[in-house]
Image (cartoon, rainbow, N blue to C red; front, side, top):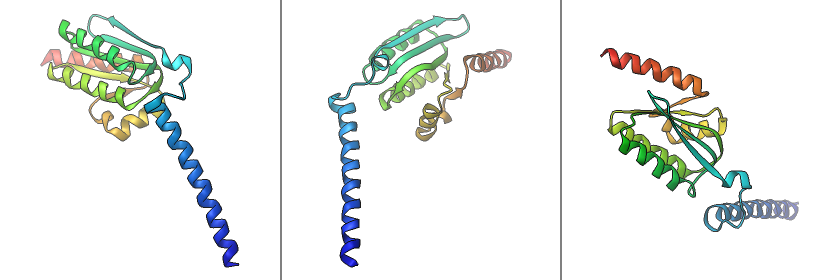
Length: 164
């Protein structure tokens, strides 16, 4: 009986080890060797910037990760140099988001905040909202489920700060 239980434990440990190794290989391939490519639609990133007068809309679609972060940084740095203050970053079209993207959003937030501006992030994706919660980003940048909600909150903020 003891030998049979040991054999079951050994089999369970082997299966767990195989699962762990497969997950580690996938992680390494995605983040270090890119042997397992993401689908084409995730690899293509489009960053659209629209000046809406009272705020600037930065819409991102496709993958937002280490490959697209330099494009995002260049776009937002140019906006900051032009003196734009209030932003809505729309992530509704984002198909993939990684830690580098989150770091880039925080760097952008710090620069905007340092110039007295604001950022609002639009995403209805439950997984992305969870990432923002786990990392604490949602405590410094307000998340909205829709662009309309973000625009309404921004207009309210601008009215109340204009009165002061």
